[in-house]
Length: 354
Image (cartoon, rainbow, N blue to C red):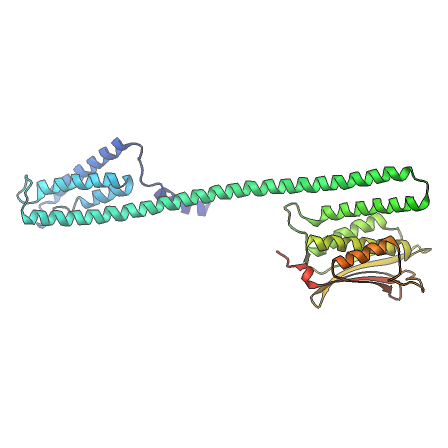
């Protein structure tokens, strides 16, 4: 409220000169002001010393120029100059051309010319400022419309991507019903689960305005989603994250897929034959790198397990994705249980814009 009220005088000044579409009104007002100044000068004649014929007329010229523009100011200057020359320069009631009259007139012309030029320059500057402000306001409105449209398009794109992934998962699920071979059913079932995970990741990767979700929020949301879908009643989960981290999409998606494989392995293989257990997800920064760990307190890895030789689809996918990230990937016993560790180099990090 206060800023609006303070800006109103400036806005009014920027609208000057006025009555540009009504020249008759401008000139009539100027004539009235000139005649009023003449009457005032006549009334002040007894108390003013000789030699000030134009003193009452200069304000009229300035007012006419300020409110009505340069042309009206020139008209006022000519009219007031004639009044002063005729009535107040000796001999009175006549237009004389002696050197004293011409000197006074030259001084008057110089003063009114400077005033008119200065006021006109100020008004031209005001006009340019007003035009620039209007262009800025128009551009701001257009930018706001474009931003709103971009946000709507982005949301629509996210929605369509999610729908397409759901359609792929649905088609695979239909195909699964017609299969009897166990290995094929298992492969299709895993594919459906992974497509659903990718859809979940895609929906959580961006905010509605298109900004990337901070990595800690992203990992927490993805973990909770995976825990709800993979969890068993007796297994508890916890997520510990470090804030102020953002990972570019080409890094966040592979990271989330590796996390999904690690949680699935911990749930399905770490607690075989057991009803209770704990799985912890930890995201932290160490030496400028990002460390993601999934640690369970289950049975651990088999004695003959060789990480580099393991040929399960999930591990092969995780190794490929870790190479895509230029990250170090390891799966090892942790006594108790097992631990998946992913070390992502700092060049993959994007500074948090918040």
